[in-house]
Structure formats: C-alpha cells, structure tokens
Amino acid sequence: MKILKVVGIIIAVLAVVILIGGMFLPKTYTVSRSTVINTSDSVIYKNIADFNEFYKWNPWAKMEPTAKIKISGPVGIADHLYEWEGNKTGSGYMKVKSVDPNKMVDMELKFIKPFESLADTRFDIAPDGTGNKVTWTMSGENNLMGKWMSVFVSMDKMIGKDFEDGLRFLKEKSESGK
Image (cartoon, rainbow, N blue to C red; front, side, top):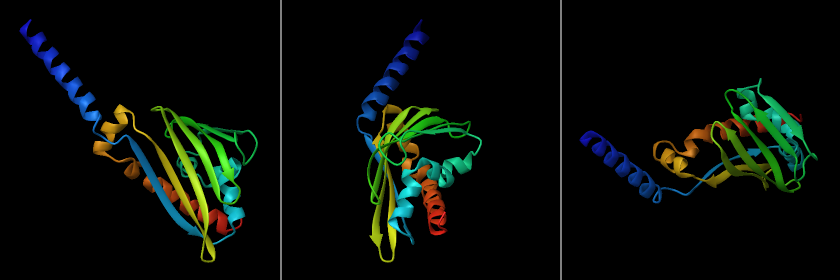
C-alpha cells in the first residue's frame, strides 16, 4: 500500500510540474525564411497561389511524392484547397484564406496526423532590386505538448530547413519560367 501512495504522489507532482511549468513556456511560435527570386511577381504569385503549381515545388511533396493529394476549389482565391495524406508527411490540408494578387497569399494550415495542429502560413512578395523578395512565414499557438516540445527542439529547427528547400525549389521553378 505504501508503494502505491508513493507512486501516486510522484504522479501528482509530475502532473503539477507539467501543468504549471507549461504556463511559463512559449505560447506561440513563428518560423520565417526569405529569398530573392529574379522574375516577375505575377510568376511567383501563380506558383504559390495555385496549388497545382505549388505542388510542383512543395518540399514535402518532393519528400513523399507517393502521398495522396487532392486539389479543389477556385484556383488562387479564398477556399482553394490542398489536401494530403502520406506515410512520412502525415495528413492535413492548406486552404487559401485571403490574397492580395502578386503581393500576398495567406493560408490556413491544418495538420491532422500525426499530431493535430493549426497554423497560419503566409507568403509575402515585395520588390527587391531587379527581383522580388519572397518571405514564407508560419505561425501558430503551442498547445501543452508543443510548449514542452519547444524546450527540446524549436519549431524553427524542425521546419526551417524545409522552408529553405521550398524557397530554393520555388526560385528554380519561377526563374525557369515554368
């Protein structure tokens, strides 16, 4: 009986530490990367806002080309939808929330598997010299598990490299005129 009491106290203390400690950990995260692409804003915009083109440079589609995808809704405007389901990439969707043609695309990003989460993903396109600077930003709120995960590995470290690869692929596709 004494051992059960000790185990119960240990579990209670751990629960309190996790809950109270979680109150002091970051509530939100932001990951952002930029690159300059030497082509018109309209070409870049089409490659981002049209999920049929987005699929061609998307770093996660390149990681798992066998993932099932479905693209639906009006192209390049609110409610344009990209859904995926894969073994490596899990499942979820991206939905265009709003656009400012040739300047900005704002999307809702929902992961369903392996962990459910919701994020805002935004692409901003701005003139930069003879090209255009593209900034890819993802932000969201950390749930309790996300807060504790951020102690060991930041969201920036988890997906920053994927953003860099994606922008490199977007640059190659856009500058080649495809």
